[in-house]
Image 1 (cartoon, rainbow, N blue to C red):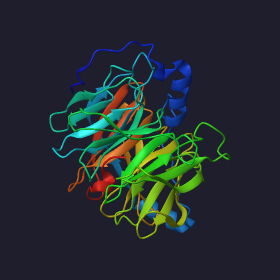
Image 2 (cartoon, rainbow, N blue to C red):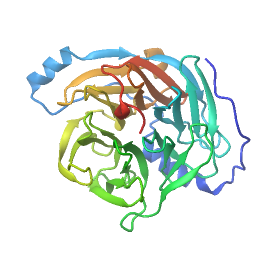
Image 3 (cartoon, rainbow, N blue to C red):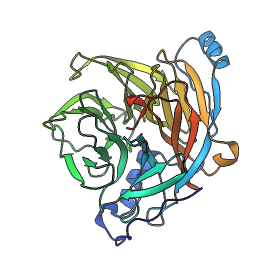
Image 4 (cartoon, helix red, strand yellow):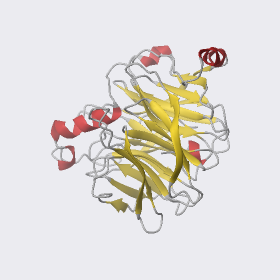
Length: 362
């Protein structure tokens, strides 16, 4: 399998964005890097024991197949972490490398049929944790965790533009994941507080208007929200709460400018591992990625555990996280980003439902 070509020269290692070990520590806390993959554990969904037992018998165990290695551990940061897989208009799969230093590709475009990858974008300051194409302008939007801003680029990796930057209600954001509604408005997880005590919940879900970039806080005082995906009918959001290992359902009002109701929808018992990004297929199933083990757990809209996607056992030792998943629209071809001491990889598997916008990026 081929590896990405270097498209740009390395910048000086003294670039301020990394701020030495302190900045890396922030990223390490965000992604929950444990170094070693934790053993797979049985997720719980909070239903009665007999229901759990029945669901377990009907759970699909899926082994993903390696497509290619995209990145190696970066000497400058001591890590590589692939995230935000999303399919572009020409069928290419785009991923970001959260810990790539200046000069190394921060956005890669992958040809899944050929098993090749090309670095298409880098800059001096961005620490990008998710990617998704806007339905409004067709540009690729990137969330910058350390910069607290949203940047967009073309599908060719050119013309970077800052869509949003600044505080929200007087507080900086630690932007993690992104979801677009049908009209192109942005919904983002602010994972502020991820590196503090769980009881000091400070995270938020923020809506940004597609035209004015005006912000609205939809929910606050959350335990480090990470993954965010619309339900298959765009009536609500599934939000992965990193510090509480649960997936909340946020039902939205008619124009999606406020939360009408909310409740915990799925509880995940992951041991040392924690939930990360998520995706939703056409049947409403939730694909929950995990830090601490290279696995994806699949839940029905009712919260039943219906499938577990894992890398082959021989690969698992050097892979500590499965951060996110994308299902190619109109198909059941699914791809997950997996990273660890062995590098950053893309694996493929057959999804339980068809890919839609909600299964594609964020």
